[in-house]
Image (cartoon, rainbow, N blue to C red; front, top):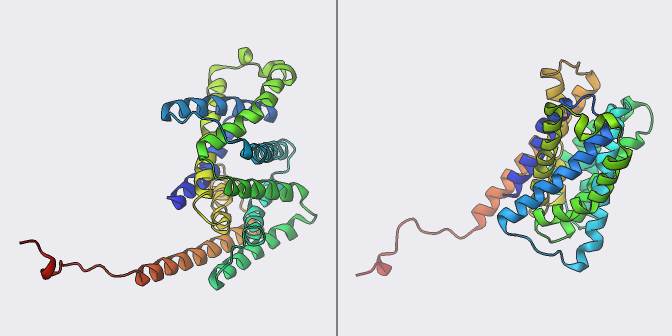
Length: 300
């Protein structure tokens, strides 16, 4: 199930979320962020009530959840800042670099080891990232900050053994006072609820759903998969975003980005082949159960 949760999260981030926020062009980024947190809080409370999972988070996990909340809040904020300030190249680089940071954290902090074919996949993916960084011409600090913040968030969610929905609820409520404060006192008057048209308000309400569900799926996947696996699957989201921008929004796919995409897909294929081989080896090592019953054990 971990693989399905991860695919759901990354496909949502690569396809659903970009289309959603593209429909909100003209709304200030910080207003979108505030609404994301507000309506995510409402959605997750209703979800917890429906599932009857309302219970307190153990106190020993409070500190780590505070850190994870600040990390995901910083990641969202930096991404929106990049969009608003014409730094989309840095933002896209961040999502390509992030899986490599996750793989490194998995090896250094959790002691995860890559098999040879997995190592080759990481190397090919790293080559693609190197091409992108070289194309940028300068040190992409925004990209690195995005990559590191989300990789650290993934690490903490891996280390905190807590129900994914409950953990996301705790993180959201930790950010809620900041969101409410901004919307109440700092947001422009043109972005107040009373000033928004029905379509825009409806799209802002839906940010709670498009934000909450992928993060809950991601948290569920983080508890079931190796951090290295999560890192390599992460390439699905920026790859989908590149395809979406070309096929739907008519953007030109530059040669450098085409190379990054091609090398990323090769890396994913290698990793998938290795995973299939490992799965078959594990199946072959299990004791074989006879397909026909032993006559001596038949009743009567």
